[in-house]
Image 1 (cartoon, helix red, strand yellow):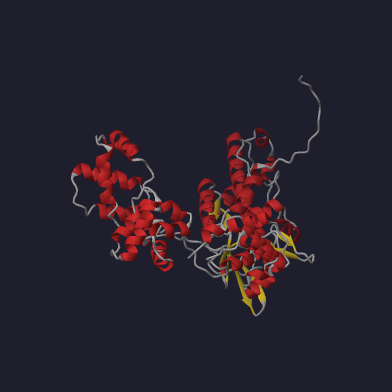
Image 2 (cartoon, one colour; image 1 turned 45 degrees about the horizontal axis):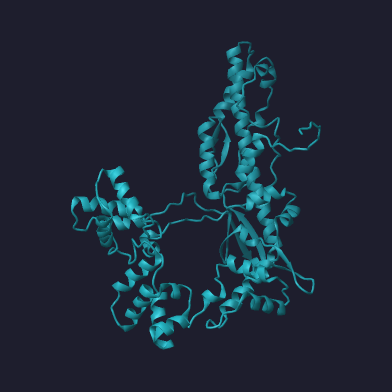
Length: 490
């Protein structure tokens, strides 16, 4: 039966301007320039400041707080605003500033640049080889379709029947599976070895067939061809019994297999996905004094357009009664307010990022001094939120997709966060510390008799880390370490 009732709820609704500001917090430094360019294109009252040169000091002190209702830009026209002369009441100083006014902070003197990647893709590499083959027109069309269907790992995942249909619908070519498979064999002779395989077993067989055929290679080929399930499950006892060989001979063959490439798509430098990471922060150790720098090289300095300020000044000198003139003034001031708001938003973004990174460095000082991951303290978003007086959601947005350059390497900000784990003595340690110890124990284990999760749990308990077996399994999976059976070696 349906019933009606009254209830009260407290809801917090973010304004469009607050949402835009939150999005700015999430933008990495590498993408900030593009975001600013977009704003420059849609707002003629916003412009780059040609008077500020690279290397000048940047203001990362607390900016004026952005007001959601009064100062936030709005694209909606309000006729009531045109009936009032309040729109003309402003002082020149109100807009006479830019995003790099203060010299409270000295930034890194890096040249502005846009990173880019060069090099051929994996499929370009295959296409180059394809054009060197002596194929008839129909064979070439089939080969082109096959190469286009190969994934980034180098495998052909689509069924040949589906390839036949693709050729019929996309290229109006009538063929059959046998004809396509014959062309596929040609593709499988391309480099890198194993490309075009339909599964891991076929990939390994292709690579083994290309090797110089000696007794060890032939045994390896026999293992993959006839005993692949036993090999993949590391049932070495069954292999020894079935192949009638000794352990040393089997080990040589397995070593050959283990040195093959299970993902031939990543075997060539041409297939590398070039990704450039531009650090958002740099932390330098100056004789024990840790200095934090915010990367501002991709953030052009901004100001409110002089021409818009002059237009507004010229209108305010006279008496404005015409509605069109009022509309023009309203448009000018609206765009100037939007420009001023965006400049303040960028400054607030830079300030928020800076104080957040300062808090992280202060909290993890011992790590930034030594580079020893065992020195990383347990740290969650709430810890940094309390230090900076920021909301946890804001800290989360700042930490997302941001990177920091240290003398020990470049790390994601998420690298410095980890949960707490209480030891038997009551001391709190980072879960990262437990993962590192777990990794070390597995690295030092006897591979002929790998440690089970239960054994690892007991070893951790002996060291004072009281965690459950399922937690050990969870950490092991996070570290991409297989179960004991799959780690077994001869």
